[in-house]
Image (cartoon, rainbow over all chains, first blue to last red):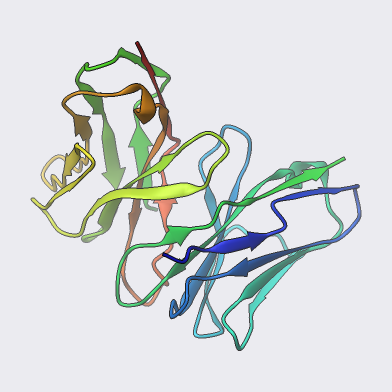
Length: 112
Length: 114
């Protein structure tokens, strides 16, 4: 079965650089979520999109932005990177009205 | 606000031992409850879910019952295997106009030894 695809899997950036993370949801899933998981931490919700519109917003810094495109893939743009942005970034997708979210393998971002 | 509290780990068990990982939640109304599992270096996998009080979710020998009276969703397995070693996250969400975001507990690491 098709799963959520995230790219790249690993990314190394320097402070103050920008990064773009991509997420390709499971086909026919209409909702995408982004989560950030710091080392040894639980995943924290950043932002979600339903049918290409932002549906909810969590603890996402103003330096980050995201969107969902017409083909339902989503991108998380991160600017002025800080050391504290180093984390695993997960994308998840859901087919409403089902409850389950299906997670991708994550992108590990390291800021040096 | 909503929150999930899990027992701290790591939990270390011998193979074939009984597993319980405690999870309690604080929320208004009737959230849906989930257990996710994260194997080393991998993403989160949905293990089981329950959407209303007294529902029992089960999968791969794991079970959890949604107890509204005690606001709990404890994970159990009768006989663990080495391959069950992973981090387990309890989570809740609401299927409302708020978008169904997940609120996670801090995770409990399980180590199963031969």
